[in-house]
Length: 92
Image (cartoon, rainbow, N blue to C red; front, side, top):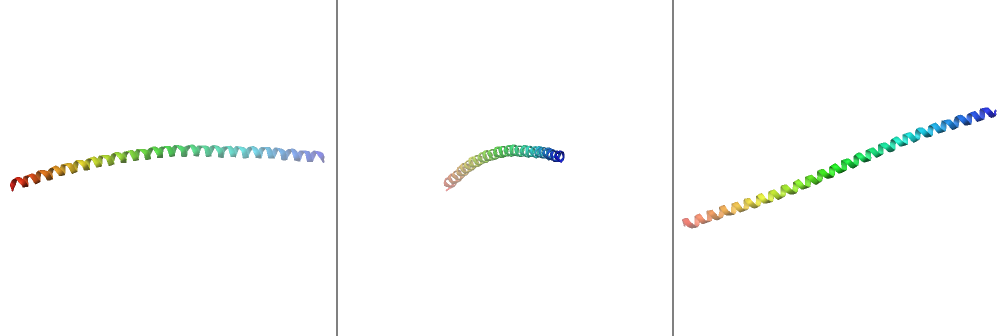
């Protein structure tokens, strides 16, 4: 009777030890997967930030160029209006 009880205890102990190892391996795999996903998310966030910064810089440059072009157009228009006004004054 003692041998059967001891054998049962031994078998249960072995089962528990193998089960806990499997659970630990699964937990390690899950932890590794979470770390990989976190790293991937960081990389995506950094790339997104860089893309946004580039877009902002390009937008700023585009706006500056548009303002410069608008100023040049206004200047050219003013000169054309002044020339036309001078021609009208000279003709009268």
